Length: 525
Image (cartoon, rainbow, N blue to C red; front, side, top):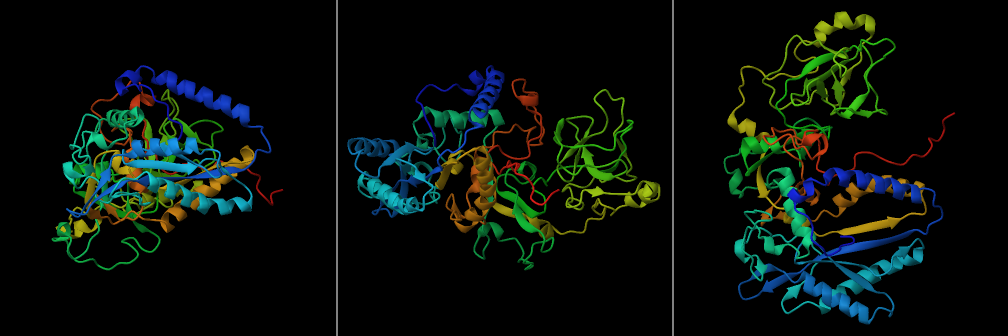
């Protein structure tokens, strides 16, 4: 969990007036720290692991397992013992975690870069477990499980001591505030995320389907398409962090799944049109992509004058379109004097409620300048890059259910931050090596997560997913409705960046957005 200081955190309302200062101070501190360490060379490679444990109480009489809210008590007892025996060989360090039933354990001193230290890892893990067991009470266990399978499914009888469901912090319908670690940071963080977001977090995970799952009783049998509905180059996707539109349509009990080739694809009401890039400025060859309005992406392949792009106008940000590949382009200059894009569609697609993916993989139609006029007419016909739904919709209600799954609904940060895992932290020898390791871990992390997937049960049900990552991401998603691409009745939020209206395509706790290593390209020149 990192360094924790006991203090009195500010509420969200109290924090608002200081947000601008906090943002600027954070940037200054980052720049100052970077300048201080960027030229360091020859630091020792150090690393360590962190293991999170959940403490459970077994009730043999009633054949029931509950979470035991003794995390702080157990942690304090273990650290007291470590202090008394601190100089006797390998040691351990125990720190708080989000749940009142959780404890995190780390080695007291880090490992180094020698192979001999690899032999310390398992020895240290065994030592931490042995010492954890010495502090547990009767009928208590602390298995290394990714989550407590019945969290949120037992009502007021889900913990020892029992905690009443609900509370001012989470407003949850499934868990009580009393299961949150008593350290003031955690409850404040939970409340502030909910208040910034404007509503409770909304986590909906696809429910596993078998012949006895009652929620699927009226679904027809699967067609047996093993590669998904879009062919072997696509996959069935639970679009965690992108479910607001389906929530508005289907509520808490269902979630949309489907095929995707693009992490920025989303289910959104949109009118797709074709636009010709035609920058009316001498010497201008085209436009740079923007990852958000006014945020240029200089290193991406950019559309040239004469290219045709497919996208839709953003009503909340006039003068901009969002493309099918997730990037943005301005329609004209800020003063409206220079035109950048010209709409060339002859027909639009007002009934396209799903934002069809055709064109997402290849967002640009590169066209020779001398062929543009002849080809524009054919490009603008239906099927030339934007798929329209037929006016005569013959799909049955059963067919429309193909991309709708019953959902396991969760509504509090505890469902994500109450998960346990093993984490690893590195100190590299210099900045260059740090960047390199970062990029390598970005590739390895999802592979390791797939190999160690161990979260098939959530809130007492079998999930149609195996890893906890999406649940964690959604459990701390503090984006405003406008930042999630929905209508925001409370907008603008004057204290937030871009007044809380800039579109953010994922939770802040999510996968990385870019690689950061800046090594030279071998073989050039």
